[in-house]
Length: 278
Ligand SMILES: Cc1cc2nc3c(=O)[nH]c(=O)nc-3n(C[C@H](O)[C@H](O)[C@H](O)COP(=O)(O)O)c2cc1C
Image (cartoon, rainbow, N blue to C red; front, side, top):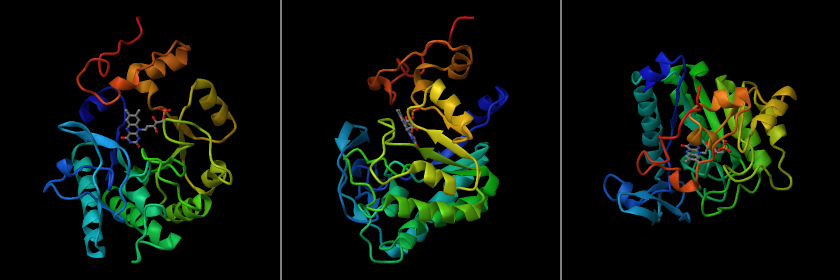
């Protein structure tokens, strides 16, 4: 895949994930409980070989296990390197493991990875440091989504501005390639709770900024013109428009993928969307 992207003149970055508590025992190597900062069950369903099932009760990671989690990210970063990617993105968004550690709603630990903001940010920063060691700082990005609840509408962090503000300021020491930021609730809305100012968080980051979430061409052009983004990431529009960039350049209509086809289940409605004629 990376060869194909390069042959077409593209670049491709691999996102490194750990879903943490948002998992099911059937997906675990030993059928054990998913791991999380604290034993707090998420609400929602995930994909298993037996279809969509409610996510399982997680167990809290022992402090002694956390170095192993960081080692898994390092290993994934090395694999991405061998696979020919151009960079990696640390997924610290969308209520997955790193975000679960950041938020006081999902992190009730009393060791050095829980409690105050410095401690709750520690895992994201240690993972970023490990990945930067493998790739070099200018090939590593980070994804954050400060106001995205997870599927079960888990409360956000109680101090969004302080928590993510601290994290972003700490991330500056890595001189990352970019910060990829979900503006609003992922794939849902661009609105933010009272007291949250995402542009103020953006301004704390000393590097390239990629905005995402419910962008269309006009919003992208306008926010770029206002100096509020360096680049824009489109998600869903790419599913039904394999030639999205061309369509945006030409002002062509965009096809809209129905939700049911979002996560695969065969090529139908997933990889068979036509490109524009001509
Ligand atoms: C089918 C589907 C899969 C997604 N997978 C990921 C993912 O792997 N990692 C991630 O950070 N976000 C993922 N997202 C969220 C998107 O990256 C993006 O933040 C969201 O769709 C909002 O952008 P959009 O309005 O341009 O679609 C996914 C969204 C959809 C619809």
